[in-house]
Image 1 (spheres, one colour):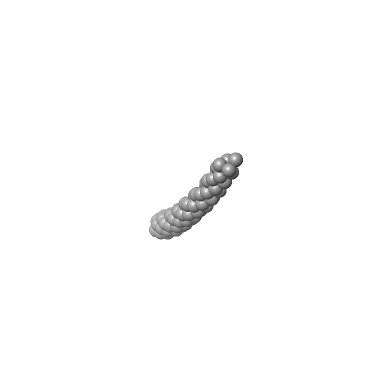
Image 2 (tube, helix red, strand yellow):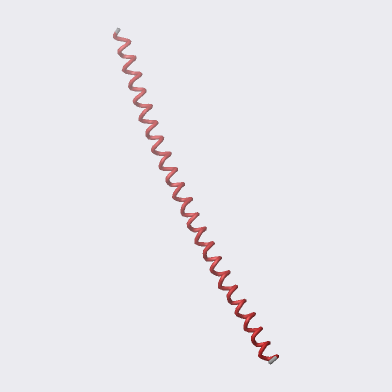
Length: 81
């Protein structure tokens, strides 16, 4: 009976150790997947921010050009008066 109990305890310890190893591996894989998604999101946000910045600069440039043209037109009209 003592031998059976010892074998059972050994099996129990081995099963627990194997289950812990599987759980640890699954947790690590999940953490890595979350990190990859986070890194990908950072890249996407960075790219979107860069594009928004470029579009903003383009819009500012167009507005500045239009303002310059308007001021020139106004100046020319004032000269003729």
